[in-house]
Amino acid sequence: MAIGQSVYICNNYALPAQLPFPFRLTFTAAIICIEGELKVCINQRKLTLTRGDVVVIQDGSIIEGLAHSINLTTISMAFPSTEEEWLFSRLAEKLGTWLEHRSIPLALHLDENLLQRYLSLYNQIEALYKDTSDALRDEVVRGFLSVSVASFLSHPQMSMRHVSNSESRADEVFLRFLDDLQLYATRERTVQFYSDKQCISAKHFSKLIRQASGKLPMEHIRQRVVIEAKTLLRTTDMSIREIADALHFPTDSFFCRYFKHDTGLSPSDYRKN
Image 1 (cartoon, rainbow, N blue to C red):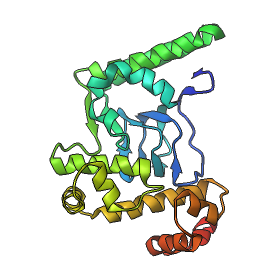
Image 2: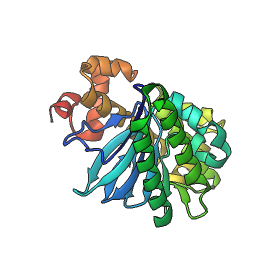
Image 3: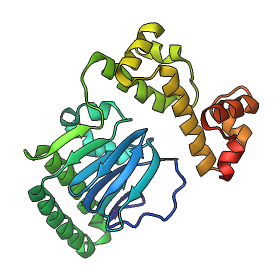
């Protein structure tokens, strides 16, 4: 099922045998696990999905790895940020922190009763979609998306959680730091920049980040920059110099040293391997 060339909904989507990890999502995705197991690493967070589990991943997220059982069956949805804004605009209060922290995947679990009802709804909507004229199919899909989100969030048996959901001051600063990294890591690599974004001294910022994550801010910055570099090396034909420019390194040789320090490989060797 689809809305034009932007929104797609399908069941039992066959994952490609090989994917160029890591890669960046250019759309928001939702995956509902019906059978089997799916393991995925999203923005440096690892998730395992089994029957009844749902994950929603916002556009701009980096997928670093994915593996699944041979019997994996899912319902998958993909839609751009324009549709995401329409879909979630009336649910902002209920979704809360998830809308604020784009780097955090939203994880849900549907109990068996809700899952069975949802599968029945999906089958009925799919049949209705096939019998509806092309001019009205968009509305059928929009209605299904709206009902899906509303039913998930309103069901008393549904549990909603973030991959990281602590409410401490240190954790809140850390989550905002990860959001800022997703936005600015391609051009900003100093702790001072990120501490300034939260109006905190660099020293106190470093203390809070280490308290929340066990790592210093610079470790997170380097890790994210390297992931951004890997994404460009794997998914584009850009030259090493062009990638160095895109990541705002002063020279391509500096970029190569930076990359090799963290990976043990030069950018060229990483691309070949």
